[in-house]
Image (cartoon, rainbow, N blue to C red; front, side):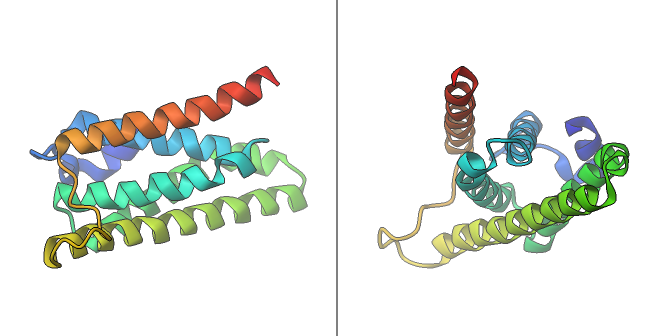
Length: 165
């Protein structure tokens, strides 16, 4: 699914000094991993990570130099990708279950879009306002990579704890 997402984004996804194409693809993989956990039995445990991951995605998008509308558009591509890939499985469910799952997916993407915009706005505010300790500075390439590894490690920890239970 990451390959399809990057294919849809096309030229816009070219790497920058702040985030190479590989880093952006790693972020997409993290988003999909968190999303997969959100629709499974660990959704309550993973829900806070969805807010964190999507907020970080917005911050990283600001560092990549894309516009706020493009952040929303990239997340909307996620919605379309999920619907297209999950449509056969959703259609196979009873209508009530399928509709409930589709509504849950859309709510989760909507929350992700909102948090990505919050992250983007906070990153942009940090470039305009004097440092006061309340806003994190715009992330650089090392910060983006470190943040992705940290979030993925946290997610793996949650999944591992519940896999053993």
